[in-house]
Image (cartoon, rainbow over all chains, first blue to last red):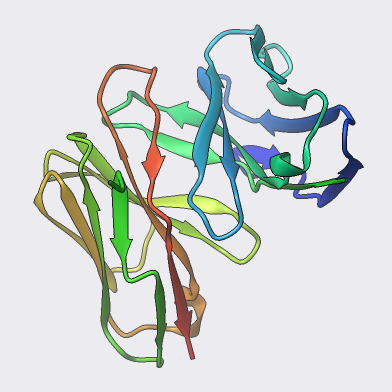
Length: 113
Length: 114
């Protein structure tokens, strides 16, 4: 079993739709959770991070963590064609300078105009 | 100015060859990484260096050897390239500040072994 599991998709939605992206993780020691966005032929970029259970909102994006069920979600409201990318969930294992990011497989999202 | 830059962007080479990928960051970060992304977009850490010291060495064939001449540079040398080494290799860097750490990635080096 991978440490972080993510449905690779692809996921195709019409413009304006609400998108839900999900990950599960196996180790309850993970305490820091991130979403990275990767456009085609580019490196990943941090989109959102959170370290506690609950919701964190940033514009059209909401990150949600449920530590009791080891579940991470990213919601995108009013999705735009510019949101078309691969979304990678990640957890930080260990401290920042000795730890490592463990990524899910990434979900490819296409938002159609 | 590019924060994390890798060269080359594309690399096509034959099996058995030795090749290097270079990475430089101008962010003043203390920690640098190499990640490998396979054809299914799965991104996995290979190595990390903190202030030129090897911190993480995942289960990577010893044909892969990272070298950090200073904390702004982390190069990756690969000996005796194999078909299975074909992937996109990403360099990344972070600044140590506890858990609230953002990794900055380069654009990637697309390696194709033929």
